[in-house]
Image (cartoon, rainbow, N blue to C red; front, side, top):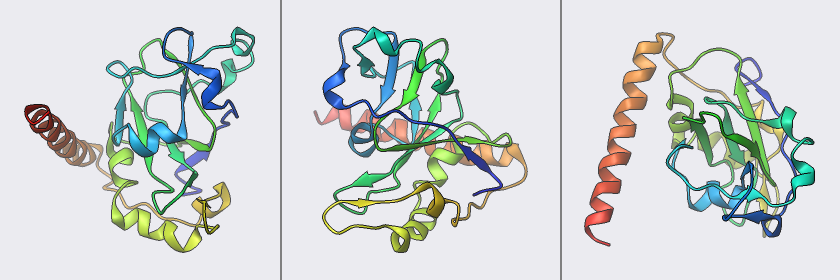
Length: 181
C-alpha cells in the first residue's frame, strides 16, 4: 500500500459537533462508514453531516477530500474495522475525513469505484484481521495499513468494468430493498 496511496489528515470533530441541517464543510464520520455508506459514496446523492461551528471553516481547507479518495474507519466494536468508502461525484462540496478515520489518496489513477470495492473484499480485509489491536474496541493504524497489499489490473478499462459491475449490483440491491420497505 505504501507505493499506491498516501495518507491525508483527518479531524477529531465528534458527532455532537455535526448537523444535518446546515453547514458548508461536510464530515465523513466513521460510524457512517461502518453502517450507512456503501463502498462507493456518491456525495451528490447522500446527505452528509456538516460541521456546525464556522470557526473550522478556514482551519480545514487543506483537508478537503477529492473524488477517488478512500476513507477507512480505523476503529469499531467488532471486526468491521477497515471498512472503507471511495468518494465519487464530490462536485463543489467541501468534504473532510472525520473522527476515527484514515483518509488516503491514490498516488496513481484508478478507475472510479475500484478501490472502494476492492478494499472491502474479504481478500483485502482478511489481511487486516491479524493487524487489529484491542479487545472491546478494535482499531487499526496507518502503519499497519502499509503492510497490506492490493491487487489490481494494470489496465484502467478492466478496473472500470469490475467497478461498474459491482456498482450495478449495488444499484439492483437498492432497488429490491425499496420494494420490501
